[in-house]
Image (tube, rainbow, N blue to C red; front, side, top):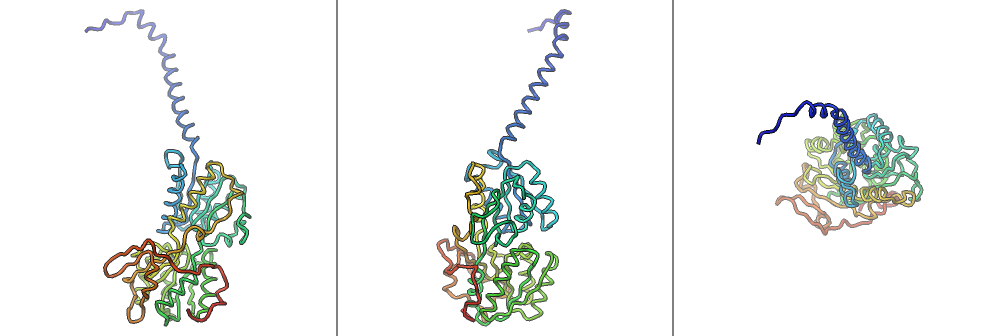
Amino acid sequence: MAVAPMNATSVSVVRRWMPLIALVSAASGLLLLTDRASTQRSLPAVAVLQQVSSTLLDDAVRGMIDGLADRGFVEGRTCTVRRYNAEGDLAQANAIAREIVGGGFDLALTSSTPSLQALANANERGRVLHVFAAVADPFSAGVGLVRGEPLTHPRHLVGYGSLAPVDATFRILLAINPQVVRVGVAHNPAESNSRRFMELARGVCKARGLVLLEAAVENSSGVVEAIQSTISRGADVIFVPGDTTIASVIESVVATAAKADLPTFTVIPGKPDRGTLFDVGFDFHEVGLLAGHTAGDLLSGADPAAIPIGETSQSIPPRLMVNLRAPGYDHSRWRVPEAILRQAKIVIGSEGRRDQPDAVLQGPFDEPHDPTSEGSRP
């Protein structure tokens, strides 16, 4: 059907109303954008900071996000999450921490001791709620916590320590090879978590008649050379403590030890087939879940002052992983007893991977304690 052309009067009316129509359209668009922005701002805003890219810290962050979701705070739907990674740079971590504190976030999660320290220092006034995890010993981190008094902490700061059992780890080492004498280890003394692990390792080695060959590093670029120096001094095996710097290049540590036909053991479980002979410690996804649940509780209105600083081992037992195909595992000198294998959650053997979900690592796990009270051998 043909449409009649507009007459002069109609055109005049349209021209008269055009400015008003345009104004209404613009106002409607602005209101829509404002409504969307308001909705976005109404969602709780969460920041996540980790110190470096590593399997452990990645697992912890993944657990944090999953823990938030368990409490109803789903990324992109019922909360916003912005992730930060300092990539091993302490100055960068401090800069990111300041950005988080001034960025309008409701809560921040941190994964690793350096990340805890960076954000805690930037957030002294408590502008952001802060939940930490993947921290070996938060009480030695210098962030206002008191060992033995879990409810003594800055009101805005809560979280979980996850100190792996060092003495139990060395007991397993000597059960596998009682002839071990010299243990090589690289560590970064600038990290409070590393200092705590080394303090325990020194005591355990002294008590058990082992020689700890130490090599200090300042950053990850010096780790391989440090490991080589312990090998040149006669190390029988290489130990990796809970040290963010060393853990970030653990594949290089394993490869360097393997060239000397030496196995590596750690207190930082990660990928079962990465080449370490055995690992004792915590599942860091589960560690992150604990923090994520606490973060969700805080976002729901829980009082942080009433939440004690937690210890991961109170909720999650340490686990053992064994790789019988690890480099340096010479069967003429090294042999994992069947009693140890039965305690492993995961065993990599000649027939592949065997998962043992019901396996439990036998204690005692009452560290930190004075290891000098132990006998000279297991």
